[in-house]
Length: 384
Length: 119
Image (cartoon, rainbow over all chains, first blue to last red; front, side, top):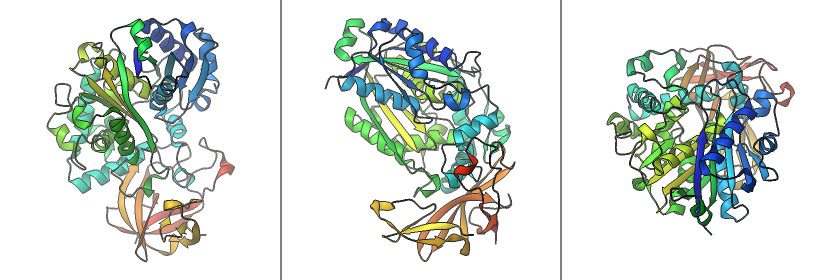
């Protein structure tokens, strides 16, 4: 099986956008074609990661619409929905299409249009992924985060401030990302005094509601070398699920999908946690950064907060996490987020991360769907 | 009215029930959790609720001990005045949130259920 390379990327401005879903997808798709230097006619497979364009906008069939809008017909198209991990699942699908030999040039575009809905409506669209016994109780993803954060802080005697420091760090990184929704720093006091959303978590513990799109171009390594010397290789990728019903998990502080997908990606790549130079984690809520750090082996169970306190996850730390600003600062347009994680890791590996650049040969991204219901972990390496 | 959990062939219990339990075991009987008390494992008060949901919405994950078999449930609390470790009992509510106010088809599921009240 030939190795799968990433040869191009793009990302629209994240935030409140005037364009609708098809506009956003076309903007990122065309930019990615340009970045990779690939003619649309050479795209054989086109994947669109998107959670809920039908529910948000009443627009379905977006993968076929995109193929025509960017003049990529007759490419095979498919929409990938895996809730908040649709982007990561799109990377997995795109990787499979190339690794299997089915496609020699695959364009992946992730996107979501959300901000025209009220916060309550958007929250409800996302909460519709819950089981009926959860949904009727009015549970939301933020309330799962509040429940989990309280349990984590009480059980591991972790300071509340450590969660706030995740927000402070990711906002500081977002300042240097020109595509981020929020390009401003926040201090710890502001985080800890912001309005309560789901006790003990406050406004700045949560990502915003966002419009945006991101894209990656994948092909066999032999084809990549016809286009560029600067590319990345996906050396490990895996996906896994945990219980749909969140309270049925044996340990509320362990996301089994993170552990399983991480182990699969490590095994496939021959890498381990100590080999990772930079990581993008799904910080939809600050507590999720802790759970993923522990599930992926970057920290012992119950001790991720100590690494944050010691500054090891800052951009100049031992393991920079969320150099893009993360979902927290960059924004979280559901279907785009996993793809945007891949964009950040790709740009770090090929030296195109600008003011956010760190020294990195091996990068990891972890994209979480639901409240850990489904997870994709991807490991990329700079081409040797 | 019952708060129906499911016991499987291997003795484990889940709420809600599923067509198959751990290890592919089949359901053998139901257990009415409303006859038991439970312990609060964790709780939150949600201040930003979706359409048709009370605001604020006090929620908890609680743990029942059914003759040595542990089963957890998530539900609303009757009050925000609780702490981890408190003992609570299920109390029936005809409508936990307003059917049809949110995105889910009202006829697709039941809307009554149980809140947890401190004992």
